[in-house]
Length: 87
Image 1 (spheres, rainbow, N blue to C red):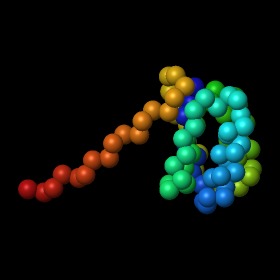
Image 2: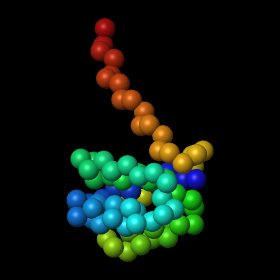
Image 3: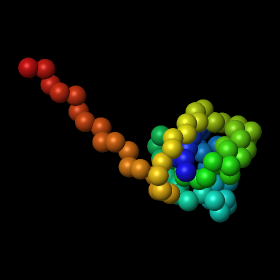
């Protein structure tokens, strides 16, 4: 399984991509971060590659990343810590 991270240029392309992902039965998990114009989804390699290609062809895709994961859920994002204050 892979987690795919897709970033978009605008909300219209983000919404269109989400609709495409929501209709795909092989997508096991999907997280939309609208404020970041980002979608993360989990799917097996073959259907995911086809989905990403179609989303790319629709336009508006700014970034596409893929990471291997065990299981079918999106891992939690690492917590961001405030930088240490100088002493």
